[in-house]
Amino acid sequence: MPIDPHFEHHLHQQTRRHFFSQCGVGLGAMALGSLLGDQLAAAPTGAGDVPGVNPLAPKPTHFTPKAKRVIFLFMAGGPSQLDLFDYKPKLVELTGQVIPESYVKNKRFAFIKADAKLMGTHRKFEKVGGNGAEVSELLPHLRSMVDDICLVKAMHTEVFNHGPAKLFMNTGSPQFMGRPSMGSWLTYGIGSESNDLPGFVVLQSGPRGPRGGAALWGSGFLPTTYQGVPFRSGAEPILNLANPPGISADRQREFVAAVNDLNRERLAVTGDPEIATRIAAYEMAYRMQSSAPELMNIAGETQATLEMYGATPGKPSFANNCLLARRLVERGVRFVQLYHTDWDHHGNVGTDLAKSIEERCQETDRAAWALVQDLKARGLLDDTLVVWGGEFGRTPQGENREVPGRDHHVEAFTMWMAGGGTRKGQVFGQTDELGYYGVEDRVHVHDLQATILHLMGLDHLKLTYRFQGRDFRLTDVGGHVVEKILA
Image (cartoon, rainbow, N blue to C red; front, side):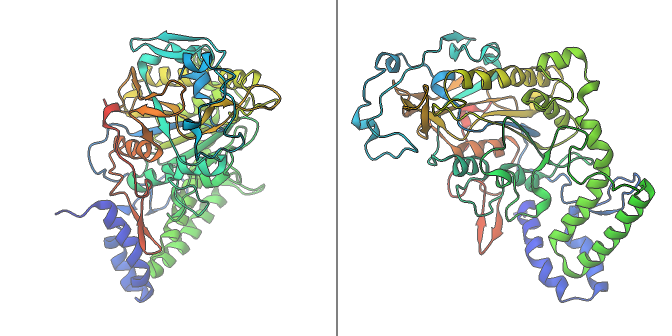
């Protein structure tokens, strides 16, 4: 039986540190190439590049992938599926009545009580597309492309507070204990196709960052080369990337070469994968000094493209980030994650189901539609997986605050996927007449994660990393590939 390449890579990472620490430098240098295998790669020979270890070099998949890259549009806060995707006439009819006890017995909520009253939506829904999907008036652009997407209507999770729920969606665990994020698992598993940019890039928009912060895109116990790299809008997309004042390009090239030589000597002695990460980081940072500013400058896009997205050069927005996501995947970046806040609809001014949700939809609907259409027009959608959704949904019961709102809901919420081997024009799963529970084709968060890995050519059961005496994986001890949504 052939050895799984990911297991072999993991075995090397675990054993070579001890081996090299017990060997002389000469023997270590001779053995290093054999042990690293395809991890030893010559970096491009541009100014400042020197041959070295490239942990992000493309790696073989477990089987033929349907997608080569992922763009995850993360709506941080928990969008209300009942006001956007899941119309329930019975819920509208029973508005103001206390929900039957059978629904909420032994259930926990973040804020509301078990006797909270039902609240139907006042938004208008319309059946659109060949599948008759019902979509809210708040998402007019999404309405026009339902035949391009797969609506997954019976998602569920078990984590009902924002920070842990975001961690669960992104890392497979609700605990702040250093688990790798999905983008980290993917770049660890199959590397990246970009030489000049990180394999995993994070873009943020909205009034603040998502709860959970950097842990949502961290590499956890994986080598840090696989962590997400946040890009910012403006002249300096990555902090501390530019040369200090007075440092010329020639001096920078000499510095990078000298530091990498020292790091390689140490790597030959210890075999420490973090040193390999450091070498790759120096080389990547040098190349990004030119590639990152060029990437972030969207002014060179056509006026028609800017108008399609609703993007404005120099003005940070979700629209700009969607356009940047397309530019990133065109350049070979493996995983791009966009976080947009604030979708928390409790009922305070600014987090409500009136003006607030309208503003969030206006900020994102057009741009998400444009991203899918742009990828499609450029021939990229077939092998680019686009995912839209948040960490959980909202309750059928109203939350009694200043204006209409809903509490966190874990039993049923909606996400959508497009391209990358998913079945387009499909409404998958159904909820009960109140939109409380999924009653058909339920999809757990771990199932979604397993399916994303599958589309990228990875078996979620085999993509593991040994840490603290056990093999970890993104899907923990659960997860099943949702075959019915695959094209």
